[in-house]
Image (cartoon, rainbow, N blue to C red; front, side):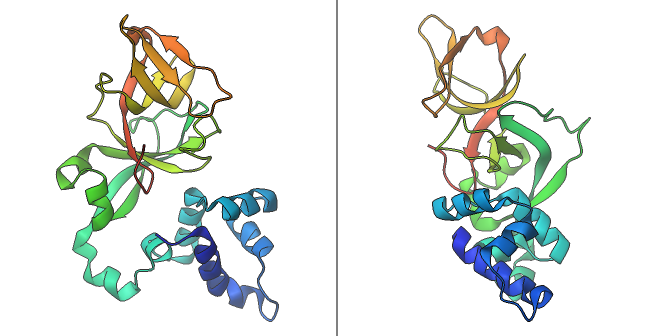
Length: 220
C-alpha cells in the first residue's frame, strides 16, 4: 500500500489544475480532504491514512480508491474487474469511543471495493459473506487503531475463548476492544491505550458482533 505521503503527492497532481497557476501545498490538501492542518500533519508524520476522507475524495473525483492506495493503473483495474469483491461498509458507525448502530436494517450501508489480494488477507473468498467494515473513533485502542481507521469485522467469529480484538456492544455503546476470558467466566475488556483502565463484564452484559480481522493490514 502507498504511504500517506505518496498519496498526498498523487492528490496534489489530481487537484493541481484547480489551483493553477499556484503551487499546491499540504495545507491545500488538508482543506480538500476536510481535515484540520494539525491533524493532517500528525497523520502524515505517523503515516496514518484517513480512509474515510479518501473514499469521499475518490467518489467526488470519480477515482478508484484502489488506484490511489495501491498504485494500480486504470487499465489493470478494468482487466481485473472480476477479481474485486464488495464488502458492506457502515460509514456512519464508529466504534471504540461508542456510537453507531451497525445494523443494515436501520442504517444506510455502502459497498466498499476490495482487491483480490486483500480478500485473501480477510480470510479468503468463502469468508467474504461474513465481512463488514466500520470506522474507528477515539484513541482508546491506540496504537493498534487510530481515529478514522476503517476496520474489517468477521461477523461469524464471536467465540471469545481464544481472545483477540472484537467489536462488542454494551449498554454504553459500540466498541472495539481486546477481549480476554477470565477463569471465573467473566471477560476483561481491554483498551490498548494504557491510559484507559480494563473493565470486567459478565458475558451476559456484552453482545459480541464479530472479530476484527484487518484494517487494510493485519491485526495483532
